[in-house]
Image (tube, rainbow, N blue to C red; front, side, top):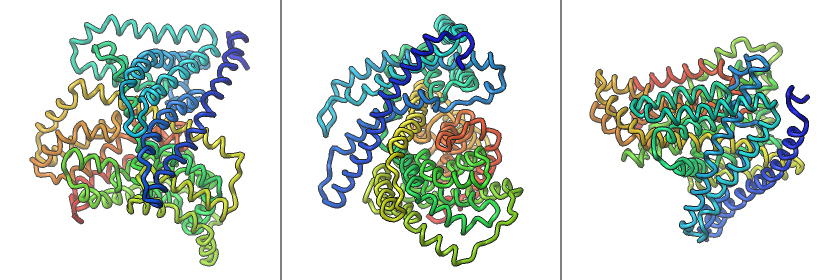
Length: 616
C-alpha cells in the first residue's frame, strides 16, 4: 500500500528508476566478483605452479576492487542493507517513523551530494598518475567513487520520492537547516578548539546513528560537516581517504570470503561439516557455541580482516545453530565477541603493522599472540555455557562412535578446507588475499565431484549478494578512514599521548589508561589507523615505565578489539550484524555479557605478562 500523502506518479517513476538502477549495478557487480576470483587465482597459479609471476594481477585486482566496493554500496542502498541502528525509531509512532526515515534519506542524499563534486575533482587529479604495471591512468579506478556516488544519489532521491511530500520536505529542510546553522556558527565554534570533536564526532555522529542514518553515511557526514565548518581542507581529501580505506588490497578478502561462505553452504560442504560437529558436540550443552569459538580461533588472521574471518565462519555454522533454536541476536553477539577475542592470533595484519611502525619483532608478536586469545576464548566459552544453561537437552543423546566416524569421513573434504587455507598462507603459496580464491576453487571442485551439489541457478544471486554485503561493510571502513584522518589532523592524537604518559600509577596506571583509551579509539578508528597513529608515540612510553613491548602490544590490540566490536559505534559490531544478516537491535541487548567476558580476559592478560611473553 502506498504511504498516505504520496501521489502515484512520483512513486511509479521512482519504482521504474529503481529497477533500472538495479540492472545497472547488479550485473556489473556480479561480473566483478567473478573477475576478481579469476585474476587472483591466475596470479597464484602462474607464480607457484609455472614460476612465471604475472606482475599485473594485484594491480588489476585493486582497480576492479574499488568498482566492486562502490557498486556493492549502491546495491546495498537499493536493498536497504546498509547497517543502521533502528532501536529508537522502532519505538516511535508511524508518523514519527516516516519523518525519521525521510530525515535519514535526506542525510544520505546530502552527504552524497557533497561527495560527488569532490569525487569528480579527485578522479580528474588521478589522470596524471599511471599505474606501474598496466600503464593506464589511475582515473579509470578512481572514477568508481564518482559513478557509485551518482548512482547512490539517484537511489536516495528516489527514496524521498516514495515518501509523502510533507515527510520528504521535513527531512530535507531539517538537514539543510542544520548545514546552514553550522555554516554561520563556524567562526564562533572555532574558538572552542578540540571541544568541537565532541560536537561533531560524539553529538552529531551519535544523533545520526540513533536516528537511523546508515552507519557509513553517518561517519562520512560527521567528517564532512567538521571539515567544511571548521577548516579550509578541500573535501577531495575525504574522498582520497575513503579511497585508501576501501581499496586496500587486503580487504579484497572480504567479498571473496563472503562468496566462499555462500559457496560452502551451496555445495553441501557446510551441511557435512555441521553434521559431524553436531555428532561430536551436539550432546554437550552449548556445544555449537564452542565450535564457533574454535572456528574463529582457527581461521582468524588468515585474511588480515576481521570481517573476512567472520564471513568465513558464520555462513557455515549459523544456519544449523538457528535450526537448533539459537537466538539470532545471541549468535551475532558471540560472533562479534569472538572477533574481538581473536585479534592477536597470527598471521594478523595488526600484528604486522605494529611491528613495522614500532620496531617490535614480528616473530615475537606472532609467538606472543596465541595465549592471550586463548584466555579470552576460555572466558567466552564460560559465558556461552552460562547463557545456554536453559537449553532444552531433552532427548539429546550422544551418538555411537560408528555414527561419529561416518560423519567424520563424509565431512573430511570440508574439514580440510581451513587447513588448506592456512597452509597456503604459511607456506607462501598465496597471500592472505589470494588464499580465498584457492578456497573457492577447492570448494567448487569438492562440491561438483564429491558432494555433487552445484546448482547454477543460485550462482548469480550469490554473486550479487556478495557484492551488496561487501559494499555495506567497505563503505563503513572507507568513511571511518576519513574520520580517522580528520581526528589525526586536529592534533588530538598528540594531546592524548601526552596526557596518557603523565598519568600517575607507574606501569599499572599507564596500562589502565591505555586500555580505556584504546577501547575508545577502537570504537571510532580501524585498528591499523589507530596503531599507525598512536603506536610510535605510546610504545616508547610503555617501555620507559617498564612494560614489555610485546605484552603492551597484546593489551592494546585486544582493547581496540573490544572497542571495534562494541555498539553503538564499533564498526566491527555492524560488520558482524551484516555478515549474520541480523538487525543491530537484535544483538544490542545480548552482546554485553560477552564483551564483559572479553574485558575480564583482557584484564587477566594485562595483569599477567606471562600470557604474552611466556613463550618468547
